[in-house]
Length: 383
Image 1 (cartoon, rainbow, N blue to C red):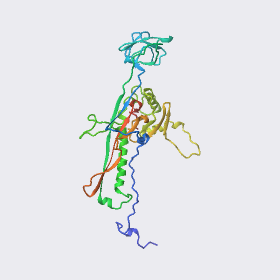
Image 2 (cartoon, rainbow, N blue to C red):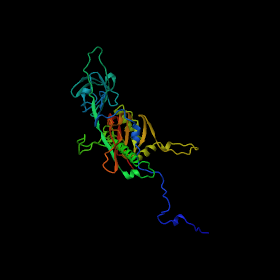
Image 3 (cartoon, one colour):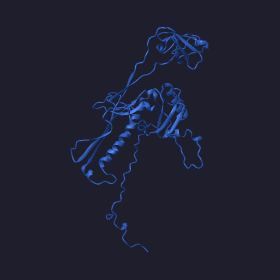
Image 4 (cartoon, helix red, strand yellow):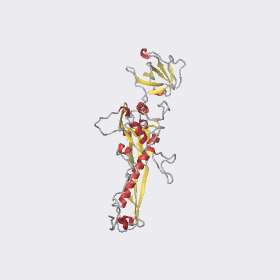
């Protein structure tokens, strides 16, 4: 028997008799996570100037390079080197991985004189471009002190960058009752904060300072130098400079990069920061050897920690890393710090009409100490 009473569909096209049914919840799907900033944690100090600086030093070098091949590579005792001042009389020297040891007997302006086959070792051929490693110096008993040698500390720096979002909410908007929002101004503050933090992580990774007027002006915006542009020493590209060829990321490339950073410095790389595509590649490194218990219903296919011969690295997934890049970072030499009194905050602005106006603002910079302690692989396949 058909229903003959009043139903919702008989109330009219616009349903004027029925109250609206709207969920008391506002959904936001836009990404705002900051995994790298979370991994680095709070800074140890604040910046005190718009140009934040720090000091870096290094030990006296114990390697140098031959700049010419001797006429008799196995017997000549005078060797041309790039930096003769790195050597002292009494240094034991080895060329590359050769078994022959040499003893420095004299140091010239751009040459050193050595005793070949020192200690009964067998002389081997040397050539331009070979690396000479100083094992150590042997002083004579009772000799006078030789001339002091030292390095000069270098001052490095980065510029602060201002991040801001302006909020304007009308008086009427503040007065009405909202669905899912208790206070419209507070809701807009929260959104602005998330947007700035998202942009801060993206900037820390990728930003660069202007080519001129880095301090900024009435027409030039001051921007910080990010991680990727600052890494110069350990910048690896597949197939270039002896780095393994092939566009796809693999364990050989990752371990080669870690080894070369280790050889360059005393750094302890503890963060591998990648985008989604490279993260999936790393997670598949050991896929062929994974085993699962029959009673375990879970399927795990991800690598969160990579333990190599050169330390233990957390694998951080950040959507702001370029798709073709892998960042290898020593977190102990990295911090993102605010200018004193300028950490993220809300500031009310002057009211000049029927609205409330304010600004969420912060000023930050990146301190990346000893860029040779970090590395980046670029030019990897992204599909």
